[in-house]
Image (cartoon, rainbow, N blue to C red; front, side, top):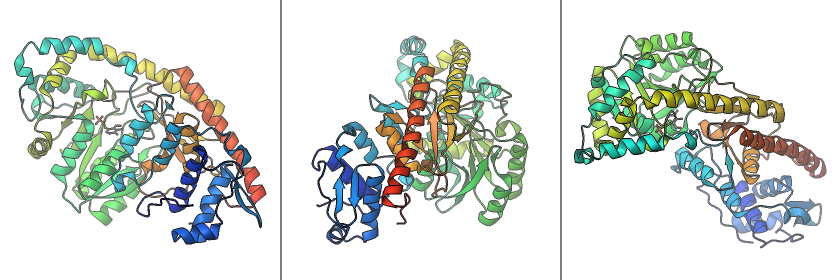
Length: 499
Ligand SMILES: Cc1ncc(COP(=O)(O)O)c(C=O)c1O
């Protein structure tokens, strides 16, 4: 048997073996009762250690696809063919979200988008708004009005259309940030805002600190800009200040990136006292705070935390927001608010990136905002998402009672901690095989974690779908345990091969 193994891949070799044999079974190349090569033979043929091959076989065995008999060998299990492994799902399992995607250059974000695009997939993997709430009619009207002036198709100012900045300024005030339109820079979403800030304010080799788990987009950008990211652990109260202080002394960071309000992936918010401590540390250690507030307007209950920028007396907070979560990600529009010292370098970085954001879309959005549609839209989506979040809380309590999870007061995601005996990789992959997409926890960490997690996003599904999807996850957890215990008892194997 010849397998195509990629030694440069981030997927361990034993897993590649298991996945390829699984695919051979799915496509009927290997049928029930077929004998697999001996561990020794496969190891010799591929220049691998026996342990690597054994581990690959053990994984297949744990999945019930093969059976091993002492002295006889390893065979495709009788029931392997009846375990449905549809093509699209198998493709997904091959390209399952990997912890090191940002380092390998293949993007976790596009992986999540692909997962959401599978037609039969009920995907909780992406933190996206409900498409049913997109204001298509109002935007259509605004676009056609704006297009009556051909200059809507001109190059516009680098900083962004004045009329849009004039609308963004009062929106920032709703978050407690008093910034004039002149101090605002329009960006193509928050992702470009982060990109521009990293390029303008840090140089290759600099250290930046970020809370972990972390939004993977910052990791990808930091890698692209040659920056080193040092992880600061977080807990229920957000980034832990003591560890941050130690890291500041040890690494002298240029920037600290944080999502203090309805953090992605946990949905948690920074404790206000910690916010004060963070601002004090920024002054003491002379670093800038990159505050990513894309979820700040999606608050469902309780007091809405003030952003750091609203409390910043020393002009050290670069504030980034966007309309992607609160309105529609396809608009690709966001904004940065920074002190006067930083605006010019930020605008220069923006210019070298893409000159300007679409004048047409900026003007259409400005008109939509000026006509007062956004306030009622926000009211509507807050009610909708609160209902969906609560449906997910309820489903988690009912179907996954052995899992821990966060209880966010806003945002679009819930962070689930898997029980200790569950392997995150296997669980999340099997979930996609059963038609439920989840984002696996490791994707939000730079280093392997002792405990498994998954991020579940609730924004784009109705409560009954949420219930249905979480029920599948609950059944999977039960099956996984039952199945694994049986197999381990029979084969005397460790479920966590040491490779
Ligand atoms: C924390 C965070 N920042 C930035 C982004 C990117 O947002 P945008 O679509 O505005 O570029 C996301 C998207 O998921 C996010 O979760």
